[in-house]
Image 1: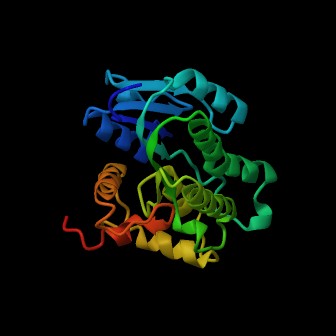
Image 2: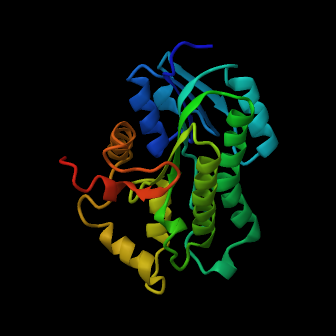
Length: 249
């Protein structure tokens, strides 16, 4: 077994927050194991980066890929469940296609159960699990059915696994407004009739309201390092901007 836990596993590291978190940990000397559908070009020059291409919505292939990819008896300080998407543009629930609805559930929710089950059932030592969640899973808005249902399920999944696995600390983080494809899809599809997400679109034009993935990755690292002082409880959902509101920039 490896003597140190300087290993992190990340899903969805090909862009956005996942890629920036990967870079942050790579530069801190961690071995980064990542899976995504496309190769993250920014990471290819790092010697301590390990990658497998995989569509996490293909459940059987995902489990087999993990079995082949993750070194046996490897310790992980962090397992970062980051892959996710909004899906089709905002619309009334009855207009969301069943196929896309199920795809978003597989991507944002079911794949994370497959990954957690792999690590837990195979007795890997995991110190922390970090999940990219959203307030959309708690505070519901019109025109966000697929995304909200998937994030609501993710919140429940993480909370229950935290109760069942007290030896692992679960960070269930609402990452708020970040310049990613999720925010772009919401903003581009917001209509006045979808009053709450239309208001979000208007707020997004204010300087500093939408933060960069790099900025948010640094916020995540600070949160992981200072979770006790911030009062974070394993498995419980929290919004990162609220926890860091008193932090000096």
